[in-house]
Length: 128
Image 1 (cartoon, rainbow, N blue to C red):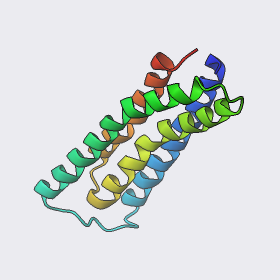
Image 2: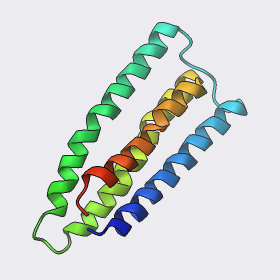
Image 3: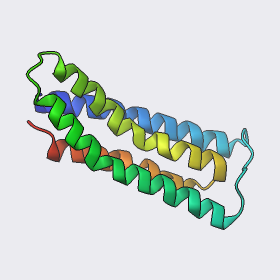
């Protein structure tokens, strides 16, 4: 795996995350979807659950992608690239239901911002 391929696949995932988050923001701003969760205790429960799941997934995915990239199979690098793209993108997948259920754009942006953390973690921890 080259550094350029990691950056490219990570940027594709990051751009996808920005698009999904922007679409969720637009749907809430235009009033296309009603706010379903209004109680703050439920909102915080959903936020903390999604945050914990998203943060816990980071080391698991890094270890998995590292093992796949170290495989002797010549096609393993393609799987690692695909996983890198999906891994970075999935920060927004956790943010989307929170934004659409609660309408809290600030906390939703925080969850979506984990996509950037995921992108940086691939640059630091994945092989060069």
